[in-house]
Image 1 (cartoon, rainbow, N blue to C red):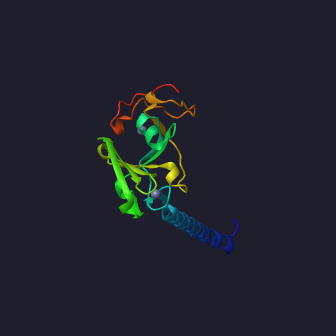
Image 2: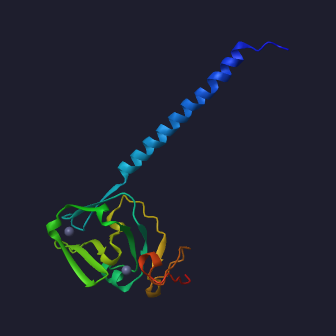
Image 3: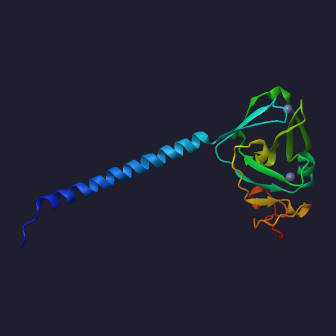
Length: 180
Ligand SMILES: [Zn+2]
Ligand SMILES: [Zn+2]
């Protein structure tokens, strides 16, 4: 029987403590990064002329492309890249007095700048969701998840994302999907 070496015991007793310290540091780092992420999770946007300024914060409820005729006409684009937010996540930070609105249907209250005619945002009362054009908030990382109203498309997109005929069931639609 060899006598146990004192320094080995020392290593054994200090090792777990060392590991704990390291783990704590990593946790702190992750927490710090998350805090930074949260702080960075605010994105500013403006209308075309800059009279109206908005700010979105937190995480969107969803994002993707809308192929409906109304969005095409509204955005003057073949498809509308949208980001959907809870109303409390979107703030008008400047020029609220310049905002006009048009409500062609119960589904959409489209808001624009009265000075430049630029698109600001669209409120969807039945969904309690505010739709902000992805192009209006340039620092926001647009990561599309789905296509909606694909039955109306004039610009098919083969990106492998689900193509909903109208809307997913969560958004009050049929949930039916179409081929690309
Ligand atoms: Zn404007
Ligand atoms: Zn649309």
